[in-house]
Image (cartoon, rainbow, N blue to C red; front, side):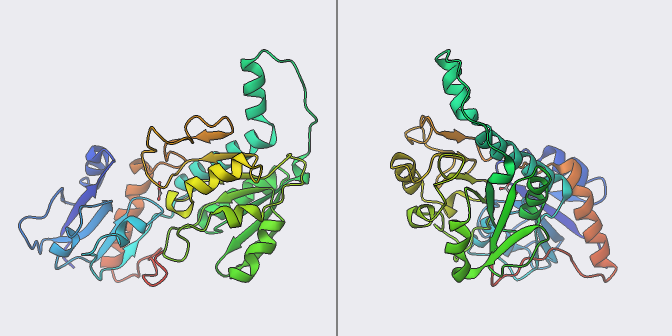
Length: 313
Ligand code: OXD
């Protein structure tokens, strides 16, 4: 099979390093030649301009450089070619670091200590044990499972919720609509790592937050979202923080990104904001497996980590 060229279109990322590493093995272009370019056989993308992929009649596969693929389904000209998402230990490691960091900070009362330090207050609140806290992970895919393993090793109780409730050792799993309320009722710290699809948009709303366990050793329920901003309703989170439904939140993603300067989330004393930075795609770790997949595909092997187009993840 002829190798063809790779289209690299990674909006919001510096393409230079991706280009350098991909072009060590294949010819890389940043735009198709003309309205139809038969010379391009693979696309490596992040938020590519709409309809650009529709100009590639010989496209064999589209590689998303991030774990989430919702950006692709926003493209009205998305071709039929298989979509491959990133599954990499490096990315899962970054996400696990972020989740452990934020769970630990809430568990060890980082927000309270920072506000005490600002006021020069010397006060030790009661300490609790990790085993008394249940972390509930919404979305037990590769990233969710890696985070669950790390949290279990630290002694937390871990619940998991997903479409099917697929079992995982050491984790109490809940599935589908019927499992959602029991999962939330047994959760003190909610970690959101779901893919954004028509079925999950807006799922982190006031009604859902209301079901979290508030009578717990933490002194309230906590939300951590490192999945997608449009899974949540920013206004519902603010309402929940202000009426005690939520004690604190760590948010890496927002309905609108960058988070508008006018958003009250920026200055909320019990919100920790990061700029969609929980797990960055690093070309040094992600390019080699992509190129290996292209080679394997051309030898007749099936592609791995192909997105289910109906489920959109
Ligand atoms: C991703 C992301 O999908 O960083 O990997 O948002």
